[in-house]
Image (cartoon, rainbow, N blue to C red; front, side, top):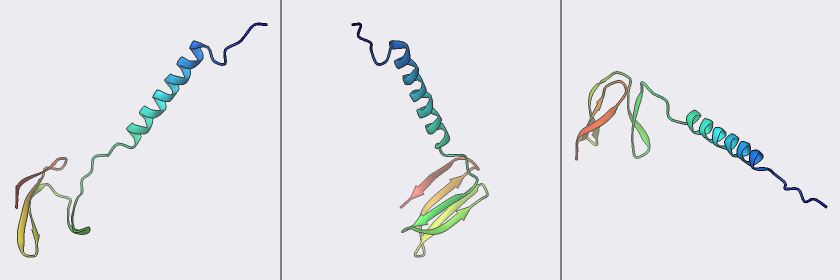
Length: 81
């Protein structure tokens, strides 16, 4: 009696290739998209929302806590306390 394997090497290769393709599609589709809105939250509440590029002073309880820059795509902080 001849013993047969469940999967041949070719079958395993195709299954592995399909899994790799599905994982790549998942990560590409769930990656963050470019946005034109910046939302700043302080203690979980929306404090500021920006849509135009510029330099913004973020205040909390009357004190300047950071200086935020937004160029339309990137966001960075230059000063923080």
